[in-house]
Structure formats: C-alpha cells, structure tokens
Amino acid sequence: MRQSPPASATTLAQVTVVEAEGCHFCADASDALAAFATRYPLSITTIDARDPAGIELMQQHRAAMSPLVLVDGSFFSQGRLPRGRFQRLLEVRSAAVSR
Image (cartoon, rainbow, N blue to C red; front, side, top):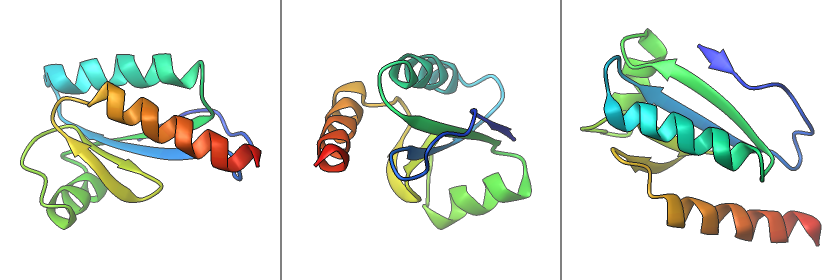
C-alpha cells in the first residue's frame, strides 16, 4: 500500500485506488491523479487488488474492473477514470471548503 504525503485532513480529498498489476486503466488513473494532486489537495492511497484490503473493497463495491476509485470512502468509479467528473467533484469540494 502506498500513500501520498500527509497534509491538513480538513481540506484533503481522501482518494483510495484499488489497482491490479498490468492494468493500463490503473496506470492511466495513477498519472491523472498525480496531475490532479498538483492542483488540488489530495491524499492518495493505492491498494493492490490482490491484497486482502483490496479484495474486500472490490467485493464491497462490486467492482468488475480496476481501478476502483473511492473518494472519501465512497464509490467514485471503476475502470477508466472519468477526468471531467473527477475535476468537477474536486472543484465543488474546494469551493465548499473555502467558504
């Protein structure tokens, strides 16, 4: 399990990514999330889909594809990361925090 550096928990979006080895959607999501992390406060945790925690999350959210992406513990997506929807979520979240 990899985790990004800590920062203020009140402003960070907690992003959990369950990824599989050799998954091109997973590599694509990792690159996209790294880019988003340069503009938005994110804490990204990556879990291998073969780890017990990864297996549990995949089953719990009934994810048929990797990567499974959770934001603040809630299902966001599976398979290819929808960048536009993710950015809109982060913008709404950032606006709510700055109030």
